[in-house]
Image (tube, rainbow, N blue to C red; front, side, top):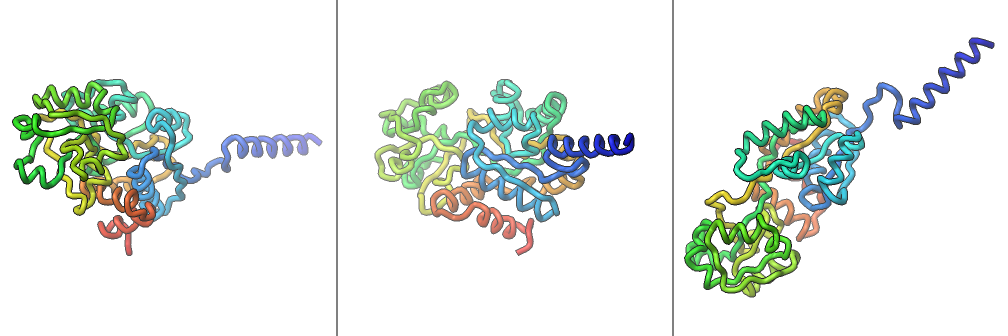
Amino acid sequence: MKRTIIALALALSALLTLSACGRPAGDAGPIQIATKPMTEQYILGEMLGLILEDAGFEVEITKGIGGGTNNIHPAMEKGEFDLYPEYTSSGWVMVLKHDAVGVDDQEMLDKLRSEYEERFQMTWVGLYGFNNTFAIAVREETARQYNLKTTSDLAHLAGELNFGGNPDYIERADGFPALCETYALEFKTVSDIDIGLKYQALKDGAIDVTNAFTTDAQLGSQSAGLVTLEDDLHLQVNYFCSTVVRQDALEKHPGLEDALMKMDGLLSDGEMARLNYLVEVEGADERETARSFLVEKGVLEG
């Protein structure tokens, strides 16, 4: 009778362990990937998933977490996700609550790694290569007409040009006001234009200059006829993309870090914009777009 009670207790204990963890003890389970609610992140999530699957890992991707960093990071702390694509200045400002202005890129990355490891038991693995930061865009014909290459080139003719941007950029202190102050710009007119309409307004000639992100889908097509100007006075902080991953995930999944490093240096700004264009504008499937690119780069076999 005593042996029966012990056996039942052990069986109950095992059952409770399985219920609480959702998987048998000792089973690392699938790697949980999260992404923010934007085309770029959907593509990057699929790239990470394809690379990890190719390395023999089981993967589950949760796409489009509302609130982005604000909700993904707490979920990472709770262990709900193992990794996700993040941008350096987003982690620096939104998670660590530091000021990004004037911080050297390498210094930022080094401190991100050390502080994430110390405070959250997470780290940053590799840099994908592209920088999704603010930029100023003009029509190609305007750039040719006025020989525009840098944002400083706008200073002497801004009074002849019409600026249109999405309201949050125009209102935020580190957006349009900082742009005008840094580059001594005073445009002929300034218009609030919905983010989904500003590129059409630029194309139609209703405006001459707009704010952009360097990997916007609309900048990923030759036919769009747009040019981004160099931020020659280095106003904008950089948003290099990397993989934030939990330390315990690296420990539970030998070889995970090596697999993640296959994303290191893989994408330029232009390549990321082109992929965004294929999915967002032409309606291509994000997983197949990611797969084709990885095959093109030799990361996966065709």
